[in-house]
Amino acid sequence: MAFLADDGSIVVLVAQPKERPTRSAKVHRIDDHLWLFTAGLSGDARTLAAHLRSSARQHKLSYGEPMTVEDAAQQSAAIQHTLTRFGGARPLGCTAIVLGRDPLHGETVGPSRLFRTDPGGGLEDCYFCCAGRDQDRLLSNLIDRYEKIRKRNLPEIIQKLVGYMLQGQNKSKTCLDVWVLRPDHRKRAKSDVTCFTEVSSADSLKTIASYLESQSDA
Image (spheres, one colour):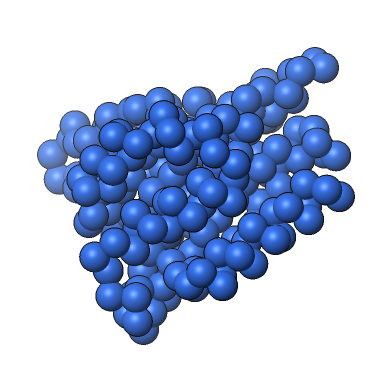
């Protein structure tokens, strides 16, 4: 699940079994300002991430500036769609969430963006999105409550999203990581990225809230 807040922050929740955590297989850094989160086959996700990194490098060499988040999402969709067009090729068995903050253009920092691409090559520009086994239930919750949630502060948004993710889950068997990407006003072209691991209890949510508040005051 990924959620774009009003202040430009993006919250991403990644759920996986505790007995075999595979964070590196689901989370991929493409560039300083670009991230890829995936659901599905980990090998296919790594293939997609490698293609996007190569495209990001080639774009920077060709145009002298970093690739935008939308450009990266379009590349992701194009790669996934291409593999559906040829006999003998197998579509990538993963759904991709491409997100980040557009690079600096002149004196203006681009906005945070969030996109979802599917194995068939479909591309969606999102304020929130979900991927994986429980996506239909989570999307239903977010569609009904999005307008109310987006007006809350960041710790309250995280609390709500964690509650939706853990609803109906066996907490003793589920490992929930919370990624927070916030505009870093000290380094205008980049984002401040923080990962909180094994989030489930009220105490862990209080720790997240305290940390985010301390960073805001810094």
